[in-house]
Length: 325
Image (cartoon, rainbow, N blue to C red; front, side, top):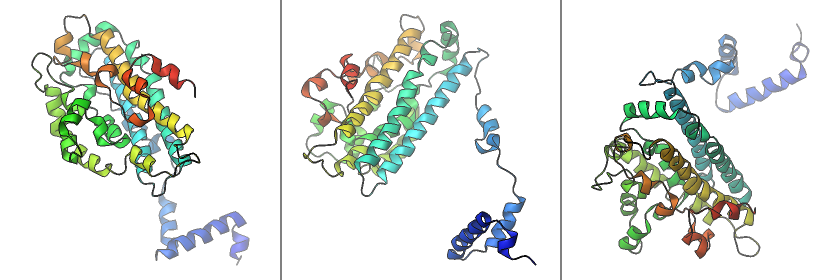
């Protein structure tokens, strides 16, 4: 009878010994696991990524062809958001963060958003305007405003106070409670009826479905958000934040709070403005005031911007300033 050394190649034998050690450490029988492996099929690409399921998830509400483009693009967007949240989770888990690790993960988040921003032409120029205006009426009151993952990204990016409008922050005074801040978060006035200020059905449905989940997420990231992680980093030789890290954080601020909303605004203007169905298609909401960054002034990292940059937030100079790095 051949010995194990004769029966197996050195590479296979080495792997068997590694597996034996691993399973023995947990009191498991390697032979039983190998028997199970014998009955399993080879991994196929289409099974691994659930391709058939993925391609079956587009269910238009109308027979208008370009509605499928609209659905697929938004599904792609949500997958990118999930990639971002994977990075935020790993950032929040860092017990002793390093500049290199934070830069790596913030850089990934920036790339995801830049891919989304660059691809938004699919929404702006990739659909027939008349087709959009027809099928959009079948989607009421649904809106991209209802993307819970985008809200989760915001909560994982910065201190909760930075997501509260400046005037409301002043009214809350010094050291407001966490729940008070969450109750005044900016998007609570984002889907309101323009004429009355009342909450639109879009917002009411969103709050009904996601309020508890967002409260839990906000609490989890209260001390784990990106800005809190950055505060735990050791200072640089001159006592300041690492310049490369600052550039990445500033770029993230602009990507999420300027470029991404502006892409939506550009799309909304193209398809909705000056059209008789503008009001019903948006539920009569205040999108013209809600989307432009110069009105909302959402800023994740105020200490990283000069007084002039803060005053001019959302204006065209931002990209040229960031282009220096």
